[in-house]
Image (cartoon, rainbow, N blue to C red):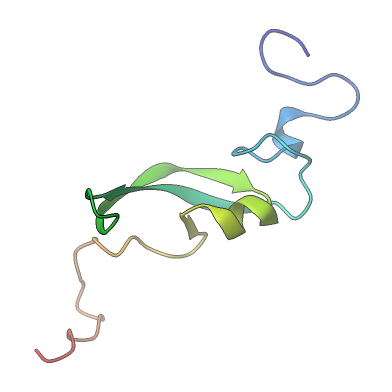
Length: 87
């Protein structure tokens, strides 16, 4: 593989999963999510990356991500959002 990460005639880097680098079978755009946990393994927060990446089905089934067309849960609610439960 050339030093710049591009592939040769077999395919292009855009044809590979951006997460695992495997063949691009069933790639879909996602936004990577980093999850933080406490010492007991409980989720304490998350950070959704702004850049979109193309991930394979295997990575989408194993790693936290936000599918294309979805917004992070920590976004500010807008007028069309339903009221929180119990509130």
